[in-house]
Image (cartoon, rainbow, N blue to C red; front, top):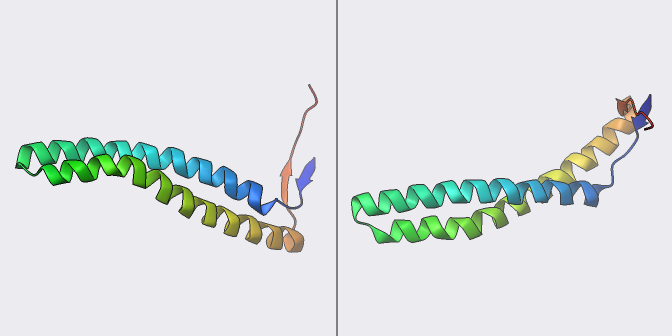
Amino acid sequence: MKVIKSIDIISWAKIHALFGIIFGLFYGIIFAVMGTAIGISKGMPGIGAFGLMSIIIFPIMFAIMAFICGAIMAFLYNIFAAKIGGIQVDLVDL
């Protein structure tokens, strides 16, 4: 049984940012489709433009928020792991 004593804050935050980009792109596509559909049905072309901009804006916003949250989580993990012990992982050699 191995124990994760600490996590590198920047590397953990980068991984979280990557997940933020993926989720932001997913939500951006959903907003683009919904915005375009609502814009066409209501005769408001500006809403469709907002939907298309969300494909660019959402991944950036989600990546920034996820990076910050990931850094905070790794920092807190390092503090708590030092006091109460880290996560135990069972590793197998192949």
